[in-house]
Image 1 (cartoon, rainbow, N blue to C red):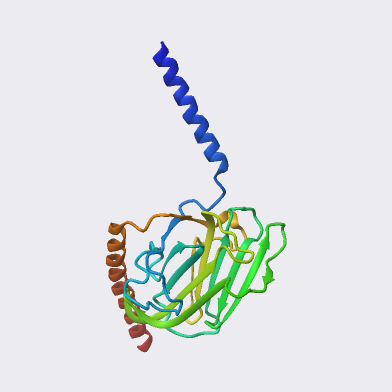
Image 2 (cartoon, rainbow, N blue to C red):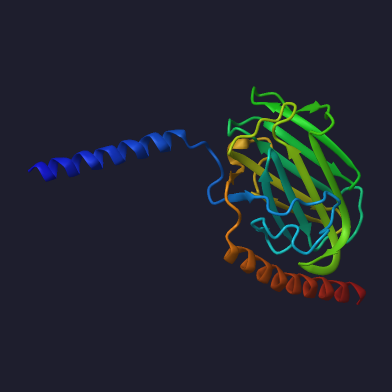
Amino acid sequence: MKRIVNTFCALMLCGLVLLITAGTVMAAEPGYERTSYLTQVVPTIDGMWTSPDEWTDGEVTWIGTDVAFRSTLDSGITRWIVEFYSDTTDDPGDFWRFCIDYGQYGGSSPTGWKFEITGHNNIAWYVGMGTGSDWAVYTVNEGEMDWANSLSASPTNSTPHWILEFQIDKDSGIIQMHDVWNFLLQVNDASNPVFLAWPPTDPNVPDEWGIEYYSTEPIPEGLTFGVMALLSSISVIVGYKYFMKRKETKK
């Protein structure tokens, strides 16, 4: 009888823990979760792979077969690299867009930050307060953010394509990122046109963005090897698709 009571109490305790945990999970788009692992190789923010191992410490996340991105975090610096394999032209209508709800405050109106890079030359930083109002322009202070993009080849694809490197200092200025945040990435190639997003949801509704977790551990070695092998395979497929598209256009 005592054993039954003890088992029952243990089950009740587990259930209570689950309820507490469920109560603290913030809203996000189901099925869109990824991890920012601890930085092992500090990248040079120049819009290209400066060395073959510069970004192999980041977990790759795909948007279809056209876009791959990854991120790492250390000493308060969060960094991303985005490769847009099928975008090989320079257009004023091209853009990169990052939306970050740094504390998972959620809601159905702009919360956190929105970064928009248009025409590969101009960046705007917006702040949302989650009060039902629209995004407000934020004046960037020195050291808070850095970015660069270029048409370059990379270890994952020998065809020059647009590559963006982007970083924010989460401990400077207004930036105070937590260990879990909601995140949305959108990219646009105006010439094709191709618009892709992770997740494919509303940039004004942080409850519908994906989730990024921060890990204090480096990326598992097996995952790094698998990532590079997969990237190499996908780049061949993307290159073939691009070649066939050009061939059909010339007819």
